[in-house]
Length: 191
Image (cartoon, rainbow, N blue to C red; front, side, top):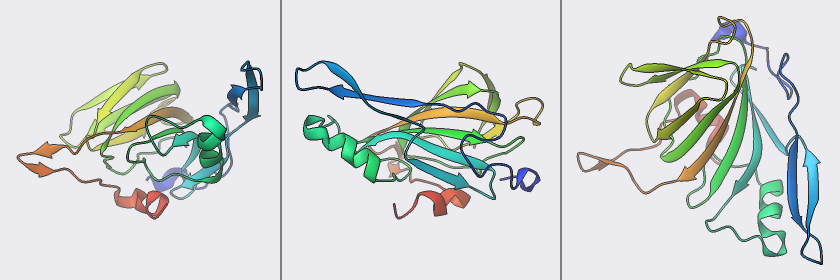
């Protein structure tokens, strides 16, 4: 990640971005929908040299999800997830400092990425790139990529939301693709 924005993000939300609120629902004894929890998330992880902050909105360890007895709720509240779960899901919001470029990385998963605030350049390992603006969506199919926050010509923070779902192994010429975290490894491994 770029050293130029070091020290920018160490709390949620990142300076210059609005606070987001998560509303978790469930059921009362009569089966009617109720709000169980309203907050800003349970797991916040600073990435890089205070250059980004991951906010875990929710995660599950299995599909289909077991919600009886609030099994999923207890798991999501008590467990800080890895990059993604096999047979599960992770919903992660990341606040990026101005001008940050993520390391090239690959999750072997199906990832839906939505630009919530700002503008980002999605750069693939082939060298191809696209600009994504607020409301745009990327569908990452286990491709190696980088994100560059170009909001306000790289002078403002930006925010994206990802939902990561498990996938079957990806084979290229008969060989499986592996996860590539590079400089992101310390933030996701052994979790």
